Amino acid sequence: MEFFGYDGCLVLENDVGVRVVLTPLAGGRVLEYALNGVNALYLDPAQKGWRHQPGVPSVDPCGGRLDVGPEWTIPPHPDLWLGDWTGEITGEGRARLTSPRDRMTGLRVARDFTLAADSACLCVEQRVTNDSARPISCCHWSRTLATGGGIVLIPLSPESRFPKHYIQYGPGPVMNFRPDDPQIRIREGFLEILGTPQRPKLGMDSTVGWFSYLTRAGLLFTKRYAVESERVYGEMAGLTISIWYFKDEMCELEPIGPLERLAPGVSFSFSEEWSLLPWRYPAPGECVDLTELAARVRKIEG
Image (cartoon, rainbow, N blue to C red; front, side, top):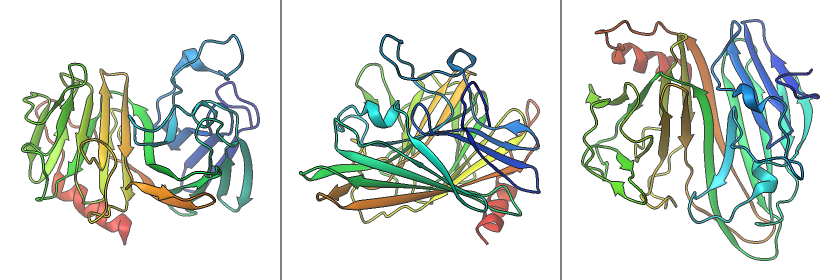
């Protein structure tokens, strides 16, 4: 179907009101992850139909992005981030997006999407292959842009290396390990980001393996993924999660995988399980029921 100005989009739907729209164009992204017609993902109207072409100004693409990191040490890889991929339906409720070979890194990437028949659960698996003649170190880096102005809810693990369970980036290259931000608090074993922080980029080292984002439209968007605490994580502060909360416009939800050292011809894969639940956004002065939240996520896992 045509969606957001892109022809040839792939669509996964089920009977409980969930629709997933994928485009192989401009970086192989998710354009819609919706429950009952409400999209949890941020789309910039100015980018409608944008494609990487000579003479066309570049953009930071919107939607459900995935990437390869670590952020500051991997070379730029525009063929993966902005290039045109290929897409195919691979079965009932299943689709795959496949990248070209990236000329800068020699990496190839395939993304497999599987939508459950009876729920809003979407399995997103990214497989990265070293198609070069030299070893490469890299990691999974999810960069999903959700709609803005929501509440981030991260269960904390007691072994955090950060005094406040998170760091805040900036100004400049500074990583502040003892921030004091009125929009961020710890409550009942969760880190809550309640609104626009003083600086948008944040990092966490939680090993619990999931977090949620409550949109203003009343969708609880949860990501679950494996954390291997005995392994090395390649971001400079050893992060397992990064959050980029930009005003009320968008919020980037970023699980980060462990560092992989790939010999030529070797691959690794990393899976995220996305889910959506209807959840009332709290009125002023109210709080999210964190006990119920944890119970609902455990039920999804079951």
